[in-house]
Structure formats: structure tokens, C-alpha cells
Image (cartoon, rainbow, N blue to C red; front, side, top):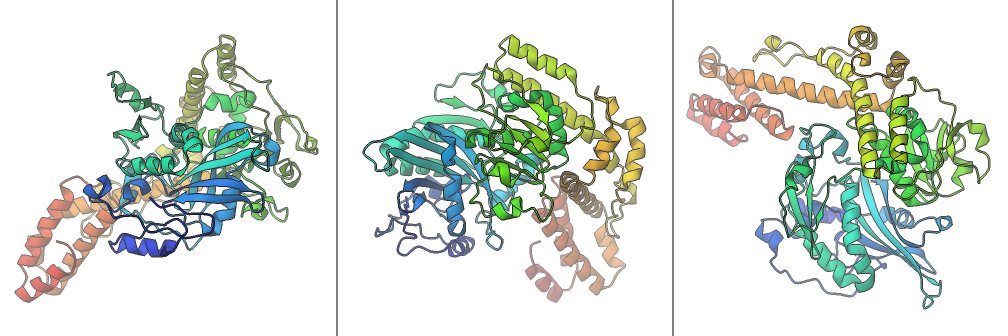
Length: 606
């Protein structure tokens, strides 16, 4: 285990890029060591037994673990980091994001989440093999190469032995994976004991993580950590939206399982929307359209949960713009997001510092919330107010916007949730109702778009093995709008309103741009796969008898490129298609003169 003090990298350690190169070349990069310490012994472990490099198991789940404390002279500072701490350029930012603002007054233990941008030019992936799991994930859980998540367990308690009078420390897990509920659960298991037992305990916990199986979507995983076994299942893109697959595995008792997680990524939706559920449909529209949105909350816990709930409310559609569950005045994007010289960007910010009430009052949509109530209690519902009313730092909770929703408010869902509150229905059940409502609303909106985009696909009979795959037809907004009269959302949704206006606005949003690019890529890959399958059905040996050696060699090279493309892009081909194509390639090469056979056998796989 490697530890690092705040002074910087230990002796003999290497920069992030050196580590990346070492891994890519098949060598193990030396671990970081404590300042003045010696490198650890090269002992065999479970990771090595699995054929992985040391820390490959750990790195499949986490980038690094760090501890941020408060230094009277330096302020927040990284005291310890385990595994690679490659964010020297983001170190100050991470330190500030790991602590609540001083005005929050968070006594005791607080958990929250932040998200930060990876600096350009440093996007080095150490685990290309693990990226293959991304293809089986739902689009909203795929890793974003430009961003990392930070999961924080912060403790602040009185301690008269310290000059400051308080013990203040954060244990932070940094990962590419957006598994909010999972990592918060991990921190609940290890952080309290870490604060009592210090580094050796954390070192042991990280060794447990290094022995975990890879985060494969669709598999039920048993993940032991410090005497506790967590049972989780990561969703796949093939799951029916709105279902939780892990439930069906919990019927048989297992004495070794300590914690069963019904979800890895979802937050308590109703608790977050509780203060504003009268306006939940309007907020769904704002998120769907990628409108600039600020959540002003009393603590990072409330701000991060609310931002994540907003992003989650348009699922299974992915929110393609930037979002920051907890954002501070020290953030490297602070000037970019608070400037008045241009329109606010498409981003959802969660903030706690009262200073933002002044710097962001020009933003078009602001949600100001009070303390989130414990489960079972309902706060007073906030009102929609004009932005001009948000002038003072002590403004009352409310949704400050001039936005006029396109759709009429669904009174049925409001009555259903209000009845649940009166009957003291559990928050989990309320969340299920609200999540199903958002899911049905999103699906009613997206199905007409899916139907129209599917019509842009060329007919399969137009695919010829001897021509390039045909192109998709162009997306024409007006042509799409004409389809809504007969096959619009009115077929599946009871909600009335200006659906056409909502679609016109959506087609100009970053969420449409991201969604359509994703669908276009999937459909283009499907065309490539169908083209590959068409080639496999041809009698290629008969073809080469009618063509020259030069044309035959050209065919072999093109077929090899097709195979490489199929592997690289994970084309959705039938299981035996690639094997058939390899057989065709081998047969064609054997039909050529020996000198050409030798050359072609050396030019890549066959």
C-alpha cells in the first residue's frame, strides 16, 4: 500500500503519464510511497493470481482515495492519498470541494458528492480493457471521459485538544463511475472506523477493493470490505427501464451478505423533490431542455442530492450537459460560469455559499431550498417567484424563474403524492411513484422521436456487400413535426399542453444533440454490422476467380479492416459472423500465390 503526505510525491515515484506508459507497455508502474519511506514488498496477491497488475482491481472501481484535513496555515490540504493521485493540477479544487463551505455549519458526519472536469491534454486511460463494459451500460451510466466524481464523507466534531477547536477531516473516493448510492454506502462502512483507526485501516480497506471482481454490468457481485459483504448488480442497457433486477436475487437467504443494494446510482428522489414537488413537472421540462439551473441549498448534502435528482428525473434519457452537484467559488470554472458577458451555459450547479445569490442572480432559473426534512416529514411547498425578487442573501426558499411550462400540470400525480404524505407512506414508496411518473413522461416524449429516427434507417435490401453501407436519411425537424399529429405523445400520455412547442425547443438543446449523435452512431454501427453479415453470405472464392490478384489483395485488406472495426467499435454482429469472415479470409489467402500468402499473413490477424 502506498501512502503520500501533503509534501508531494515520495522518492522514486513517477508522474501520471509515466505510470500510464508503464501500464500500457505491460510493466507495473511503481507505487507511490510515503515521504521518506521505502517501496513496499512485491508480494503476490489475488490480483496477480487473476493475471492483473497490482492495483488493476482497485482501479476498475476507483482512481484514488485521499484524505483531506484542515491545516491552520495551509487551509484544506491532502494529508494522505492511496494509489495514484494524478490531480496535482486540480489539487486545490479537490481540497475545497471536499469540505462544506464555512457557512454550512455541518456538525457531525456529512456525506455528499462533487464532480469535476479533467484538464484537457491529460485524458490518459490506464484501463482500456475495462472500457468494454461501457457498451453494456445504460447510456446514463456510461463513463464520461472528461469528468471524475468525488464521493465525500466529512466529519466535524468539537475537539478541545486542537487549536481550531474542531476535528475536521474528509475521506474522499475519486472515481469515473457515477454510482452515487454504491460509493456512499462504501463510505458509510469504512469512514467512521477510519477516523478512529487511521491509515492502516484505510490501507486494508483498499486492499479489499483491489480484490473485487470487475464492475461487469448485469452480474450479481459480492464485494467484501472490512468484514462486510455488499451484494450489488450494475444495470445493463437491456434491462427494462424502471425495474430493479437485484430484488429477484434476494429471496434466498445468504448468511454471508451484510448489505444488499437495490440500486447503485439512484438517489432518494422524493426526499429531494419534496420541497418542490408541486413544480416537479416544470423542473422536468427545464432539465429536459438543458436550461441553466442553480440549486441554492444550506449544505453540500442537500445541494448534491438535489442536483443528482434533477439529472436523474429525465432517465432513461441521458443529461448531456455539464452538472456540478457541489460547486464552490474556488472552482476552476467559477469565472466561466459566473460571467455576465455572455448567456449562462447549459449546466446545473449546486451551491451553498450565499455569495452565489449575488453572482448568479442573472441566471434564468434558480431553486432555493431549505433543510431537507427527515423521511416522513414534508416541508412547506415553495412557490414560483419572479427573478427580480432574488436580491438579498436571505431570500426565502422558492423556484425563481420567469419560465412558462409548455405542458399543463398533472394534478393526479400531485394528489397521489399528497395522499402518500397524509398516510405517512414511506419515502422509498413515494420515490417509486415519482420515478415511475418521470419515466412515463420521458418515454411518452421520446417514443415519437425514436419512431421517426428509426424511419431514417435504409431498408436492409439496399445493403450490397460490394458497395459501401448506405447512409442514414437526414433528420428533418418539420418532417418529424408532421408525424406528431398521428403518432405523438398523446397516444401514451394523459397530459395536455403545447407538446409541439416543447419538441421545437428540445431540438435546439444539448440533450437532443447528444441523444441524436448517440442514436446515429448506433444506427451507423448497425448498418456496418449488416454490411459485414452480407459479405459473409457471399461466395468470395467464386468472386476472386473473376478478378485480378491486385483486386483480391485489396479485398483481403478491406476484410481485415472490417474485422478490426468490428472489434474496435463492438459492432452488433451475430456471434458467428466474425468467425465466418476469418474463414473466408484464410480461404482467399490460400488461393493466392505463396509469396502473396506470406505477405498477407503478416499484415494483421486472420
